Amino acid sequence: MTGPYEDHDWPVIESNTEYETGWYDGGYDLVEQPDGTTKQYYWAALDPAVVIVAKSGDELVMVEQYRPAIGEHCLELPAGIVEDGESFTTAGARELREETGFDPSGISLVEDFWCATGVLRHRRGIVFAEGLEPVEVNHDSNEFLSTTTVPIDEALARAREAPANDATIEGILLAQADGLL
Image (cartoon, rainbow, N blue to C red; front, top):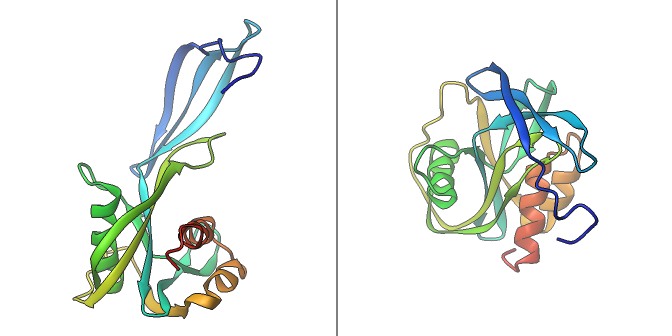
């Protein structure tokens, strides 16, 4: 990257975690800016998450669930937290089995990236799953969701319907861009 501030290393003078919820930590870093002033940059740190684009014939496997944070029922791609020691692909296969009852014979990483870099310390991986075989569903105690399928040629339009979900739209678009759908 080039620009007028590329040589400034943005030193962190202090880092404070102000709260820990078990789901995420929040706090700020006191940072020296390029002009010598300091500023508190607030952040929330979340564990990495995986989003699964699961293709079954001419359909995508999706889940419907209520999201209390926005008070809405949502149609989404299956997703979940990456557990310690897991890769995005291992976590994606596990989450797909647990949430939807499908075990993929093939799973690959489409993309991994930082989310909402102005405030979050959170990585997201998008994986593509195919060759789905039915297995037993094993929902976590806080997962109240149902599995559905959506024709691939309707998936993006359905994902854009309110309430739209960023991870679902990203997953579909990235899989389409890579020629997977």
